[in-house]
Length: 369
Image (cartoon, rainbow, N blue to C red; front, side):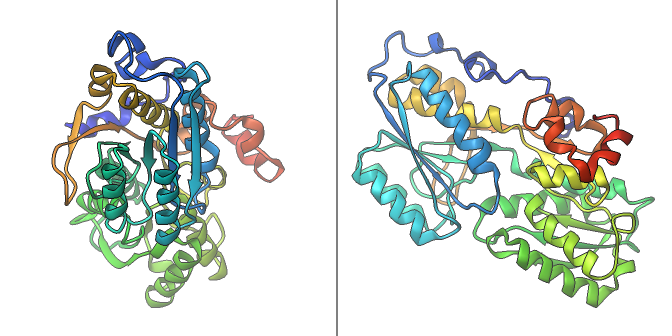
């Protein structure tokens, strides 16, 4: 069963971005000679800027990997839609007009982007859905096992509650209804929580807004009582930050907070985990996913079909397309116990970045610094 993978996937990978072999496909595993030169352009469309990972991790790794795979002749064209579908449509149209060779698309709205994906197809520009499974005739999908993400969150939350039962009330603050990943996270979490606890309040949070998450949590606290909430399922770290603010506004300090989940291992979330404000996050090894997407893009453009197939051995279905070649990475539950062996060991953050003056005592207690 895939759940077994949760504990064993530690971040012991060295994540050398030059090493295609970590994904089971070396440069020599594709065509002996590429049908296209190294002078290629990869368009990269990211969905929003609330989550810091896109600018700080995903795109820089994609850019670096494309350069490495093309002897520094390949380039990337980047745009971030800041959560606006119309903006992303305009950005994608520009990339089509600029005749980029391939587009890596992390859609703001997976359904509404479909006509733009068709436009790219008509222009003979392949589209690889990145992180979120866009609709339309996409050529491949590179992401994490999203239902497993929710399972990890739900299981971690249940385990954080002493002797969980249906008497324990849980609040769920889910992601944006326009993001198909959010539905998969929610389904995975519910598969672990249903029958073990009671979902007293549940919200689907537009655009993953931390401010809206804070307002939703405030409503839940008012309805249920701050001391009657056994735990909070937050679909990501940015919203978890808003949820913590809601509890603080209600007069609760970090020692009184119920366990709160998250996702993305953002730096503020890692610090909240150390201080006890947030129980866990889901660490998704971005270097591996971003490198895989860049490798698949270059292989696709250069006609290295064997390498492309080796990189996308999984299959997924969208509402419009069946049997999409895919690469699905697994994930790690990040808690106080494994910060050193995950985000620090993988070079995502340094001890100095995490253990600022405010968190020094907590870091000392965990022997991080």
